[in-house]
Amino acid sequence: MDDRSFQRLSPAQARAWLDAHPGALVLDARTAAHHAAGHLPGSVRLDGRNHEILLMREPRSRPVFVYCYHGNASQTYAQMFCDFGFRQVADLAGGHEAWERDSAGAPPARPLPRELSAWLQIHGFAGPDARGAHGNTPLMFAAWKGEAVAVKALLALGVDLHAVNGDGNTALWLACVANDPDLVSRLVEAGLDINHANATGATCLMYAASSGKPAIVQRLLALGADPALKSQDDFTALDMAASLECLRLLRAATPRAPAAAVAFPSTPSTSNA
Image (cartoon, rainbow, N blue to C red; front, side, top):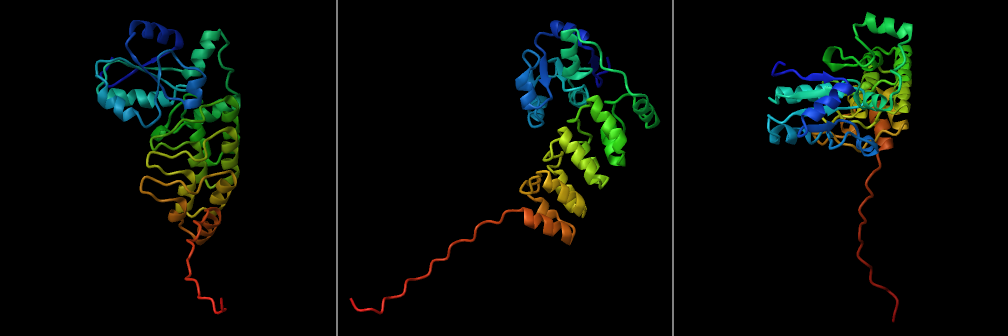
């Protein structure tokens, strides 16, 4: 294996690999809730904040095994460990879902609908969870293009909602780029985190405000986006508002700090004791 490549393992291959590497660092790239509900024995949750510590402190000779929901985010993390000089790195193809399906002896995932299969082929995707330019998944691409039919088909197939691209953005960000409020609603209702922050700490609401997209700002706020969140530069969406309409929407949604009470000196009584 090349020093800067990692192995993609099926569940059966992964079990054999883990048996052969009992001291491996096993990393779970799913949410805390999913990790708590069930995870591979001995796995450590990779939460997006501790990866730098692991990259710097773990010995490069220690084998590393990464898994996520469907085998998308795990590839990014696995390559990251390879790039930092770790020599034995593997990830789980199909993710934890494939692991559970294999453990239960369940049948493989249902075949792709013909229309979706053709759409994936036209746009150069090898599968519904494949990666394209800049790490974008088919769901991200469909959201970016505003292709609601493709988004609906991919969601029905159960693709990884939590996948992020090279900038740390999910498909919801791309729907905001497309300026499609209905698509934004569909993705949030499907389970995408409306307050997800990308690699620079920016949320979708911050992006929509800074891009002067009032329809998206209004829809995100209606769906529960938090206007009080701050970016890495300590700016809120209100601070980033690029249009008067976005500014008004965010001002109306941002609670104001209570005014400080002003103490007035008491006036002497004019009545006689």
